[in-house]
Amino acid sequence: MIRYLLRRLAIGFFTLSGIVVLVFFSSRLTGSPIEAMYPDGLEPGQLELFNAKYGFDKSYAEQFVIYLKNLFRADFGESIRERRDVRTILTTRSVETLKLGVWAFVISVTCGISLGVCIALNRGSFAVSVVNNVMALLFSIPNFIIAIFLMLLFSFKLKILPSQGGGARCTTSCPSPAFPWDRRSASRGM
Image: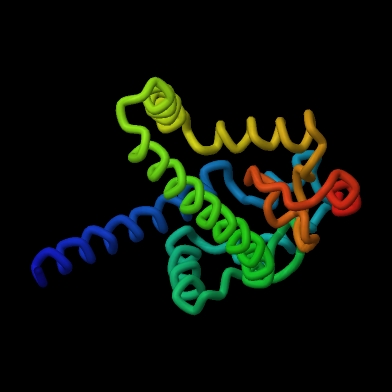
């Protein structure tokens, strides 16, 4: 058991290390990210100023060492696009992601157990074979495709839930097919 855990930890370590290296070097394939942010160019001297501020004027090896140090301290720096601390951005958005994950878990467990009990009680019927075939079809479709269709259906076609947002009561369950609110409360949250 301990060998298995150590092997899994080693695989996880090498996987994360590979992802860190891949993310670092792939973000620098096009050169300085500042140049990508301002394709029309900058005033004379601004590019050098931005490169010095964000450390892009150093060699890739120095940048990588600084990147690793900051990564281990959970210091992700300042977002070039939003000009805010990245840790603040992640924490504010992770709260909404956690809410959405809890809703998805509750809905999937409730529907899964209910559907499983119904299938077990009606074993061998035509309805059960239809449900089994539909579920096999749904399992073969990627989740993000199903989420897009659910958002199109509930947000744009039926206009029951908003397509984006957070904080309002009705936006917590946007991609999930739960509607405890009427159309008026959903439109106020948009």
